[in-house]
Amino acid sequence: MIINICFGTRDLEKAGRFYDAVTAELGVARTGTTERSIYYGSGATGITFAVTLPYDGNPATNGNGTMATVGAPDRATVERMHAAALANGGTCEGPPGVRENGYFVAYWRDPDGNKMNAVSLAG
Image 1 (cartoon, rainbow, N blue to C red):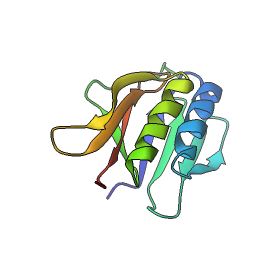
Image 2 (cartoon, one colour):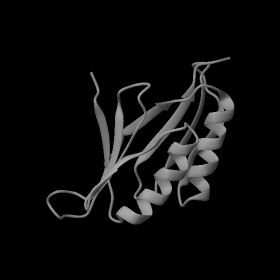
Image 3 (cartoon, one colour):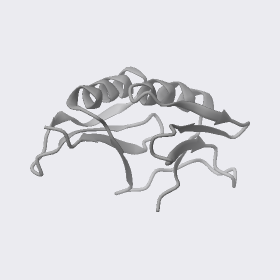
């Protein structure tokens, strides 16, 4: 069971602006902020997301092949999340569209290089 997904960041303020915009498209908001971390969540899934400065003080790095997938209720939400990511310093890793598996998906990287995607299973 996944309880939390966490991405490291080199700039907590910049990461906060990015994820405030992207998560807002799902109706998700910050649930907490500390000196080192920002937390997001909704009561709907029980799964939370965090962005944090690494505990060891070393620069945050992203994992090659590592990605977090976010479920979206419809294609329009996937498109809005992708647009919000790009408008807030993210880069495109695959534009919104139907993939071979029939899912409607969009991929992006945050300003620190962490890869995410949103998927709608709705037709």
